[in-house]
Image 1 (cartoon, rainbow, N blue to C red):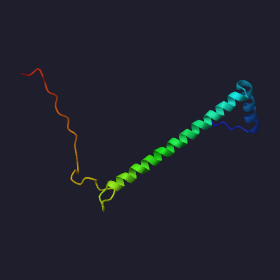
Image 2 (cartoon, rainbow, N blue to C red; image 1 turned 60 degrees about the vertical axis):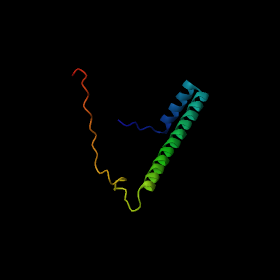
Image 3 (cartoon, helix red, strand yellow; image 1 turned 90 degrees about the vertical axis):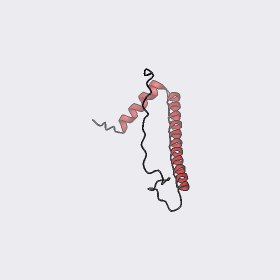
Image 4 (cartoon, rainbow, N blue to C red; image 1 turned 180 degrees about the horizontal axis):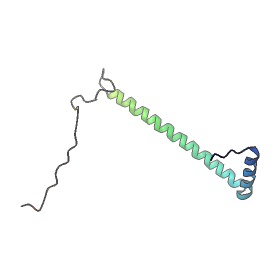
Length: 92
């Protein structure tokens, strides 16, 4: 059920928050929230930049004339991981 708050309801909530927590605590909470959002934005930008850099490096190491769909090493077309059977020590 969505809550549709009008202007006067927001005013009541703000006044109650000021009475309960005080102005300095709310200011500190707002400052901390702003700092957290800024750090989050910086980290997401850094992740995007790292992904773009990794993609550019992989494109640079690809042989000339090869597309992104082509494997980097054409000699290895398919590989399968095979587990080696465990050695039994009870057999003599």
